Length: 121
Image (cartoon, rainbow, N blue to C red):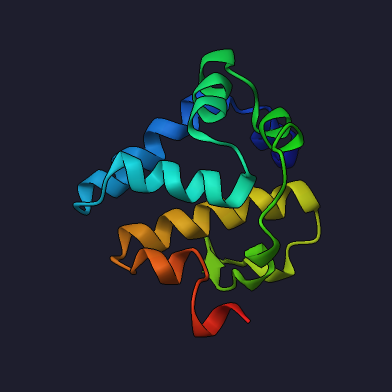
């Protein structure tokens, strides 16, 4: 039941929370957008359309052009759950995004967040 509620949440309601979390830690909306676009394959215009259409998280991820090939390199714990061990594919994508935003808020460099460089092999 909890999964169903999460999947039905509107991305447009979650998105400003991601931005607020980043801005509280002196990061920017542009960085949040860059992370979302990196993970999902949306460009800025498509991301804005998703927000305006008020799609739920399930639709948001279903319509995403392509999950980044390096998304499997996203590891760690978010909300007490190890993201690489989440079995439901949609829930794992949601947790990946949560983890990336957490890393941004914790001050991690964008190259590291986007899995560029040595750790992106």
